[in-house]
Image (cartoon, rainbow, N blue to C red):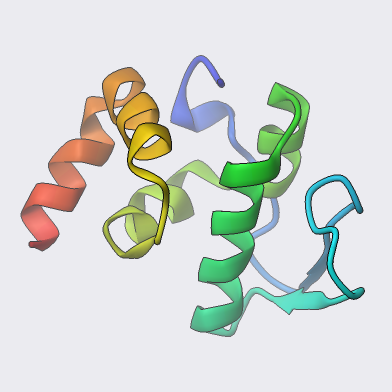
Length: 96
C-alpha cells in the first residue's frame, strides 16, 4: 500500500501496456483517454499489483479518487483501501 494517494503518480494520458504479472491475459494496450479502458486498467492494477512500486507506476492518485466509486473491486480490497484512505470512502458515499 502507498503511504498517500499523492505518491501515486502513474500516467494520465496515452496508452499503457501492463506487465504480465498484473495483466496475464492476451496482450492489450489500455488507452487512458477511453473511460472503459481506464477503469479496467485501474481494477486490474488494484487487484493484481505485487508491490508498492506497481501501484506507483500505473496509478495516479487524483484519477484513482475520481474513479473510485465506479470501480468494480472485491469488498475486502475496497475496505483495505478505504480504511487506509478515508477520502476514498467519502468519495464513494458522495457519488451514491
